[in-house]
Image (cartoon, rainbow, N blue to C red; front, side, top):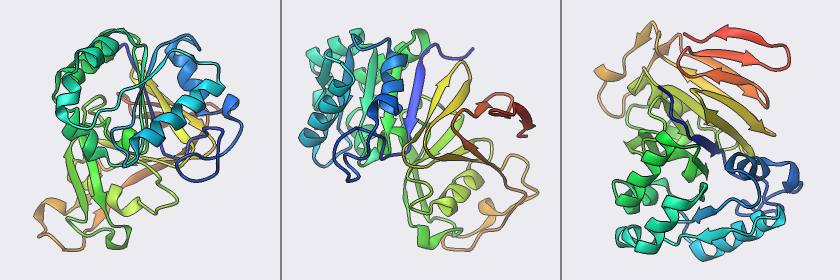
Length: 286
């Protein structure tokens, strides 16, 4: 049975309608990804929690999201400034997590999210609400990558296809079937995702370009935003020597399937089938 909640992982540099650097980015916020987050949460009156834990400048990032959501007309906003695991046990935060309609994780370092929030009461509330209610969990960059059970923690693009080049750890386990990476095109992360799916071949790798996201609900996802999503499937690889190699050895992976998707395209996570918009062509991904 699929969870009743909604996940919205975003590849980074999502349109916030202010500034032009990576922290702020682009224009046309009313038509962008954050507008879709608000819509899925129930509209501008929905209570939205902003969690900048992953960031090295959480106060600035929190204010930035308050301004961005404010441009969309949202007023029921709260920054949950979690700096350590003890903060995850604050009674006010627990109370708000039980009542909010949406959580928005910022970018930064995904390991900060798992270390400070993972396996806490706050995390447990999110998991239960996502499973049983139309609760929205959104996240950009690190906030997207932490959503999977097998979470990428790092890895150099220059060391692509070398066993051990990608770091993995336990994520927040909102979506166990996927491995999510962000800033995928601009930072050349093909190699580290290839190793990730070679290591966990039964999982689907999802590489999100910037200003691009997914709406994951009812066991399916839809691509939103201006960029592309690359899917990786090593389930039926004819040759995958990852398990046999020593650390630092070059890998070989034969018959790694990939799909490149754009806005409006859909993917059935259980059936591994792609539906491409607007032609509505169904592709078997097994």
